Structure formats: structure tokens, C-alpha cells
Image (cartoon, rainbow, N blue to C red; front, side):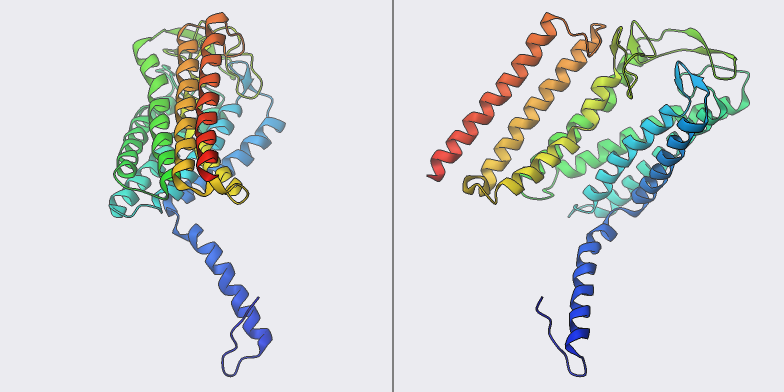
Length: 339
């Protein structure tokens, strides 16, 4: 490490100063991330830890799963997504103030939403779709659960519009972010559309033995979805949490691809061309959109993710083979041009 020695400073002190400056340079980008969203991420990390402890020490179950499974899943999901938004907002070059306030609104709404879910889980009762008119806590939390989704969905739309209006990196990263936010927006909307247009009232028993009237669910056939490990997605019918998950986290998958292509570019000269990486990301985005469309179609037909029929398998194969063919074409053209 080369250190510049200033008058009155020993070489050892200069080295320490240089190392400190380097460390600050690495940490500075983290400090520039959207702070309210990072506070939300910190709270979600704490919720993940609390939920893990709850899984170990609390034996109560709700809808055939631990009462702490839902807070755990929401905590993990918002750590990933809110962390990504906090980073993304730091990349904006225009309308930064609007982006900051929109991100803050998202953080507040998401914290209120997950907070209401956690309170209901700790009480051993249902959070979403709970129509119990005799519980004052449920009556107080229902507006948060209803309006919270609408607020951070609208905030998501504003952030997506800001990103679409400007570049936030090289062409590959910009394409990944734009496509990813589009997928996330549609992924948020898909289960909401299903639940609004298919209201089905039923009665369930919560962890306290209380009969609860619920007016909606996530799936077709088995409204609550049961069977699959960890996710608890339905193994007996369609489950709209599948396309919701696939769409919401598409942006993370595409950004990981951008990072991977950046690493591979050190060994493959033809990948150093920005246009080539952007084309590969575009192909991946189209393939991922195809995957999202297939799992949405599958859920809408009342079919479990792990029990696809012949039509679903053909659709999956078409998406995979089409994406592979497009990738091969881009790679072949880039390699030929490089030679």
C-alpha cells in the first residue's frame, strides 16, 4: 500500500491513515443508502431473529403452521426488497427529494403492515382477511393491513417511474433494474387482483380456539395453501403466493446476473462490451417474465407448483428452451465479433 507521508507524520501513521481512508471509502456507499428504509431493514432483521426464537419455543399453530411462520416470511421478504430499494434510491440522479420521501412512505407503510402481522401472530390469531367483529384489536389493525398494502404499492409505482425516467448505472444494470421493478409491480398486483375478484367466506379456528370468519385466501382449491415445506404453498391446488414471490424477487435475480456477468467479463473479453451484457440481461428478463407468466397461469388453473400437468410442462420447456436459444445466439455473435 502506497502512503503519502506529510510533514510531522511517521510512515506508520501515514499507512494507518491511508487504510482508514480506504475503509471509509468502502463504507461511504452504505451511508448513502436511504436511511428510513435501512431502519426498516434493521427492524425486519430483528423480527427474523424473534420469529426464529418463536418457532423454537412457541408451540402454538395457526392454519396448520406455527404462528411465527408468517412474521418470519414477511421479515425476510422485506429485508431483501427494502434493502434493494434503499440502494436503488441512492443511485437516482434526478428527483432525489421525491425519491427520498417516497422511500420514506414505503418504509413507514411496510413497518406498519408487518407490525400488525406480528401483533396478530403473537396473539395467536389471523392477520389478513380476518372479519372478527368482536375483537377490538383486530378491528383497530384491519385498516393498517388494508391500507398498508395500497400505500407501499403506490410508492413502488412512483419509484419505478423515477427509475424508468433515468439511467442508474451502465446499460446492463439499468435494464435489470427497469425490468425487475416492472416484474415486482406486476407481482404485487397479481394476488391482489385475484383476491378482490374472488371473495370466498369461510370459518377457521385460531390458535386460541376461537372461531374466526375469513373472507379471502391465497389459493384455488385450498384457500390457505398447505403442504410445501418452508413456504407452505399449496400442494393440492393453485396458490397465488407463487407468482407473487417470483415477480417480487425478479429484480434481485437480475441484479445478481449483472454482478456475475461483471465477474465473468474479467476472463472473457467479449463480455467486456456493455452492449453484450445488456443483451444478455434483456434475454434473461424476458425468460424470467415467461416463467412468471407460466406460474401465474398454473396457479389460475388451480394447479400446485409441484404437480404440473403436461400443458404446464410444455410451457415451462418452451420458456427455458427459448431463453437458452436466445442466450446462445447472443454469445455466439459476441464471440464472433470479438474474434
